[in-house]
Figure 1 (cartoon, rainbow, N blue to C red):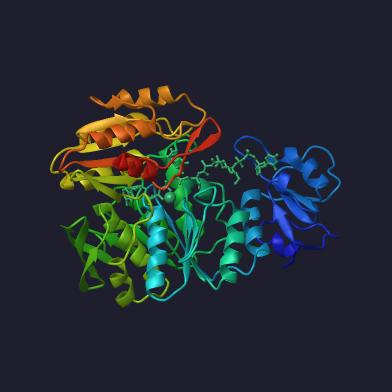
Figure 2 (tube, helix red, strand yellow):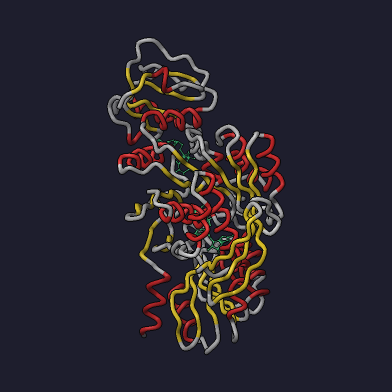
Amino acid sequence: MSISVTQLLEGSGARPKKGLGAVFGLNSDSRRIEPGDIFFALPGAKVHGNQFVAEAVRRGALAIISDVAPVGDPGVPVIIVKDVRASYARAASRVFEPQPEITVAVTGTNGKTSVASFVRQIWSHAGVPGASIGTLGVETATRLIEGMHTTPDSRTLHQSMRALKAQGIDHVAIEASSHGLDQRRLDGMHFEAVAFTNLSRDHLDYHADMDAYRDAKLRLFTDLLVDSGPAVVNVDDPEYEPFMFAALSAGATLLTVGREGAYIEVLSIEPEGYGQRVEVRHVGEKLSFHLPLTGEFQVSNAIVAAALAMSTGVDKSDAFPALSELVGAKGRLELVAEHNGAAIFIDYSHKPVALEAALAALRPYAKGKLHVVFGAGGDRDKGKRPMMGEVAARMADVVIVTDDNPRTEDANAIRAEIMATAKGATEIGDRREAITTAIKALKKGDVLLIAGKGHEDYQIVGTTKHHFSDHEVVAAAIKG
Ligand SMILES: CC(=O)N[C@H]1[C@@H](OP(=O)(O)OP(=O)(O)OC[C@H]2O[C@@H](n3ccc(=O)[nH]c3=O)[C@H](O)[C@@H]2O)O[C@H](CO)[C@@H](O)[C@@H]1O[C@H](C)C(=O)N[C@@H](C)C(=O)N[C@H](CCC(=O)O)C(=O)O
Ligand SMILES: Nc1ncnc2c1ncn2[C@@H]1O[C@H](COP(=O)(O)OP(=O)(O)OP(=O)(O)O)[C@@H](O)[C@H]1O
Ligand SMILES: N[C@H](CCC[C@H](N)C(=O)O)C(=O)O
Ligand SMILES: [Mg+2]
């Protein structure tokens, strides 16, 4: 479909130039411009898109939209807007109409992928075709299309959403990452409901400090929720207050969940096999359900998801029974094998609080020793490394420090930063060897946690992605 330039720029404060006709497409990457597209020159972390205006025009761009005038006359109209990233996001939502009608989003340091997946599963249980978009990709009941980012760039997002709409999907749950929110990737969205899971250290390589990191996440509540829409807040997290106040000052309907929750109050959690029996009070009514997932943190994720789903019209008689049928997102505290009487879990904990939550969840099952194999990603927040080393040494009995996507950093140096605080740990750089060694050491009653990569099926060394899967290595080690 096509839209006019006036429609495209609605809300940006800019007045379109005369003589511009209908717009069929847009792109922020000059290398992907097709004839008739508008080129949005975004201020990047490395360079400004203005540097690529000539290429965009050569490839057929009709006009340039930027926040500062490019040097020289590009030969096509240039429109200056204040926030070009936000304009790009809003424009993408219009170019790729029609979009699914009901969208919800979740932010927080941990649990986003799980919550988005759970919301989709609850919708499905209630007979509503839905999708989730996040770290795993774009997922429906029948298909998973892998993506590049947790929160896709605006063009990819709205293009995927239009494809979902074409399949008859009108309900989508989206993961809002701090990068995505900061870079306005979601500014074309009007969420029906939003949620906050928790906040702890991550991504301080990108955000200046914890305040900046939190402020990025708060944008979901202050800028992207429909008027008076429901805002779900996990009040068991020590950092919940700014999110609660943001919700209130934005005029949202506050729904608090957790042990201190008013909308969904957790009354008790008892282990039931590797899952748990949960008793909650939902607006005055007591309900009990079995959650077939390991770890108390999954109770938190499940009730956040239930609150989001109910905010979109799912009845409680569908929402709570659906929690007993949940399947964990791949590689999120996933029991992958039982070997020599020991249990082996794969988990995506690549941040200190996540690692602590995963080890705490597994401790009760370790009648013998609790083992952990983990590393830390290169070209990412270095401050996480000593924190993760300390957590592992304090919470596990046997610790192996290994590699996790060293990227362009020296893998030995990354490990050394973890080892500095991981007292008593063994260092085995090769991840396959580390996992195999850990499995060989398992005795009856032990539990092994393989942390950091979860669903990933690659190891990034330098800029090359090598095939690598914790799941496959575990299967091979057990067989061998
Ligand atoms: C730091 C960061 O997030 N960077 C993202 C950002 O890049 P950027 O805008 O800073 O890019 P840049 O290289 O400075 O280029 C500036 C502009 O010039 C354009 N350009 C560039 C070169 C060229 O030849 N022509 C051209 O037009 C670029 O398309 C861009 O618009 O916008 C790009 C397009 O959307 C992203 O691909 C890129 O993600 C990088 C690769 C990345 O690794 N991001 C990660 C950290 C990320 O976003 N992670 C979050 C959170 C993960 C989680 O916690 O789960 C995520 O949501 O995935
Ligand atoms: N509510 C929670 N509280 C603490 N830790 C959690 C919680 N939920 C998940 N985790 C931990 O975080 C890991 C990642 O979970 P999940 O993928 O759902 O989070 P995420 O926020 O999407 O992470 P990412 O930022 O990498 O996309 C899990 O494997 C688990 O170790
Ligand atoms: N979306 C996160 C994933 C990290 C996964 C972990 N395995 C690592 O490489 O650090 C990031 O890009 O920071
Ligand atoms: Mg995620």
